[in-house]
Length: 146
View 1 (cartoon, helix red, strand yellow):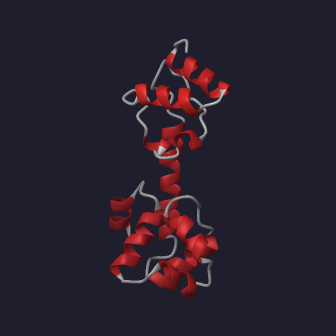
View 2 (view 1 turned 30 degrees about the horizontal axis):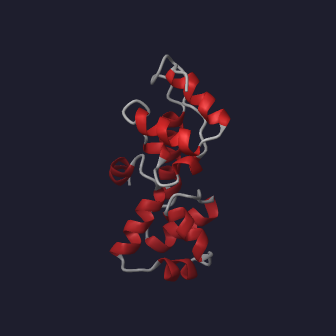
C-alpha cells in the first residue's frame, strides 16, 4: 500500500476511484448501487466536488479491493495539498491569496491557477465577473489600483 500511496499522494481520491472503475469496467451507476450510495454522491466525489465520509470510503475500498484507509489517506493528503496551495503566502509580499468566489472562474480550476503567471487573466476575469470586494482583494494582493 505504501508504494501505491506514494504514487498517488496529493491526487484527489475521486480520480483514483474513477481509474479503478474504468480499469474494472464498472459504471458509476453500477458502483453506486453495489455500495448502496446515491449515484449523485459518487459522481460528486469522483469529480472532486464532495469529500467522502469514513463510511463511504470503507464501502468503496471494500468494493474496489483496496486496503482499508487507503482512500481516506489519499483524501487527507489531497486536503493538505489544497490547503497549502490556498494558504500560500510566499507568492506576493507574504500576502495571503485573494478571496475570490469560485463561480468567477466557472470554467477554470481556481486551485490550479498560478497567481503570478496568470495575473492578467485573473485581473481581467475579476473585472468582468467579480464583485467590489473581489476587486479590492486583487488591489491588495497585486498592490495595484483598478
